[in-house]
Image 1 (cartoon, rainbow, N blue to C red):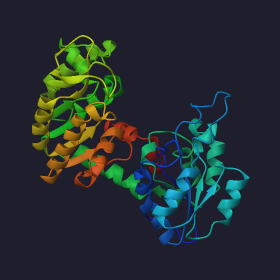
Image 2 (image 1 turned 30 degrees about the vertical axis):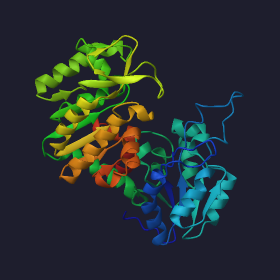
Image 3 (image 1 turned 90 degrees about the vertical axis):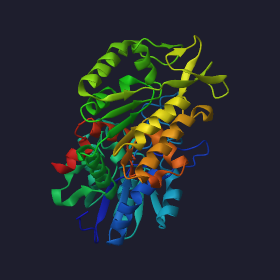
Length: 400
């Protein structure tokens, strides 16, 4: 960052959209940790930091009486863990804009940190309301966007607010720059083979990504629930596995496109199947093309894990997005764990690897493998859109 923060108040959009348990404790602080370098830089160079973020979807998940659940979605639960990690007491404003936020921002001294309440408590946030953005901008002298995970949203705090700061008063934070640089490295490097590992539940969620990747990769490994739509499209019997019947033609088109482009598509030869969608369900291994009626594929099998590992270990560039099975259920997490280990091993051998997407990131973190991956992205949706070739509103706002 080239901005001068000495004696200035920096309005910083961070991504503190972190998971909370029933006791409102943060269960995964990786996104908080990712913002620390930018916050520390502002403080170390004589500035004060006013932090804003969203948490969850309070507008869409209102209480029965129609009111916002301020207890469930408050950012005040982030104050203590943030203070501990930062080593600085963090102040909190119970509003995003208005008298309290304005007074606390005005009183902020160099070296101090203020966290504003959930931006999405204001309906104007997601609407990209200019007046709301102007009120936010009035709190600070500089604007820094370090929320890559929200960069694909054209919201007031991620995009519109930038227009109220001169070009020399706004910039990307360290995390944003790092995310953009690593995505660029992955897509612009010419090292081959380029292997993409795509999982998750539905083909419909990844259509544009798959279409984009087929123009670039050498191998496409498909796991998770979406694999069964492709297997069904090839005539497989997949029992009651998740299949998007209206996407079977699309799956065939993508497979034909891959054939024409010379891309090798790898589907799981075998699956761990279950007789119910439950960790306690009866389960066994089966050929992915011959899953019995009443059974469903919930993870890739041992043959698939070995085959996927062989392809991954030969890679020079690796993109991984999405789990290979129902990762949150221990009995169906082994495929995702095996892929995580293979990606880490390939990276150790010299491949460049980028992992993005909730369960993929959770897997490498839980296994203690994050340090063995070239880059672990904090933004699933934003990274996907970037790799699809889209312009992210949060990035464009600062580049204009």
